[in-house]
Length: 85
Image (cartoon, rainbow, N blue to C red; front, side, top):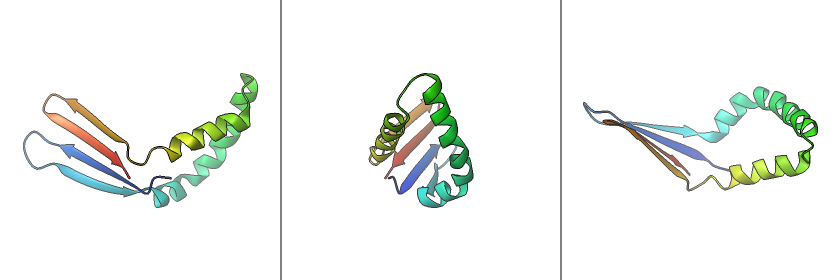
């Protein structure tokens, strides 16, 4: 599971803004939403005849593969760089 997300926003008129977001406190803060999202995902799996266990397992594997991922977005003179550690 990722431990830290680093977001760097490059501004055209100055130094970039760098934000470090620890994942564990964010997950704990959003856990009430997770309690609602998991049953909704199971209902969606049943509706579309997909194995709920396999779908949740695949989702967990995707989250587990995120450490080391980098996303770079650029629009004009503004850039956003996201690194997941």
